[in-house]
Length: 241
Image 1 (spheres, rainbow, N blue to C red):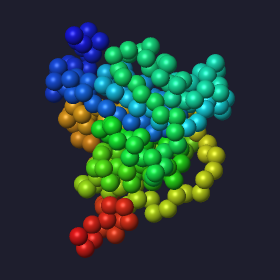
Image 2: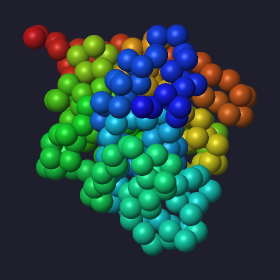
Image 3: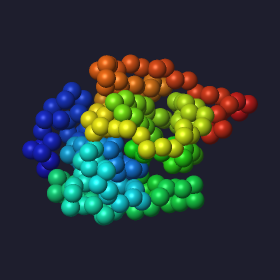
């Protein structure tokens, strides 16, 4: 019933009908429908993920259009989840796409994120990232982190209880500021995040566990920083347990 659309990816060793079925049964929250969230949503929809939940409280601004590829000039002023859903439904009507035009907080995280299997961190600010990270650790749900700055991007996959969480890696939020970015940078990092989500559900390959991938667009290089859980982490720490 879905062979024609997904034929090429189902030919990957270890994927097949069963791998595609696992994707169809999966649910993914994407928090932030901007430079990272748009291409993550686009490619997960194309791959046939079962259900997406798009979460963002912002509306489309002209300054978004150099990188947020699901938002077009005619969408300026629209809520980002609504703008993205419209395009994604045209791409693949078999994917269920739900939206939440809310800012994620400690108070609403359980309600907003409670009905998904995994979470993609496609945010542009660390305070909300820490909210998502705390919920992921508390709920045990995998978290796929991505971040960008100019021509540099970073990504890792967090499995609570098994890997370092974001609070192990970052002890405090960097200063809030408008950061430089060209659209290709979040596009590349988003593809890494989407690939990690697909690998997680299909069971193919090795995930970025306790590995922090850094992309340097100026040098056109990738390198890996090894991570370790912090036993004294205030979120996931296990010291004395």
